[in-house]
Image (cartoon, rainbow, N blue to C red; front, side):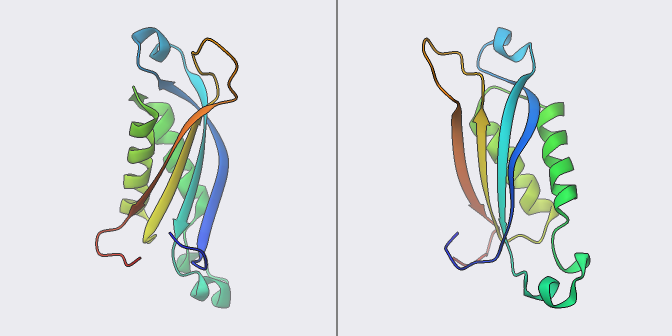
Length: 127
């Protein structure tokens, strides 16, 4: 994804997830945050004011919520990959950037969050 491309951006979506390496960690839902940036041409939607010419971000929010809250994951990387794959499979986005932040990290010290960021392109997408 490069500067100058049109994007739809959803930031700090909050969900409760079963995520963690240990069984104990996964046994309790934990708060995570997701950011999703979808790259696609927004020109037609801007000119026509037509939802059908863009991505319904409410639908993307529900997709992310269902994937995260109904799934179980060992790694944040797996959460990000699953979200990226489903966004590309269900929207016209040519590329997606996903950030996942775990807000309660089991480390011996202070940390705001741990996170991952991935960028994926639809097969055949340029850039």
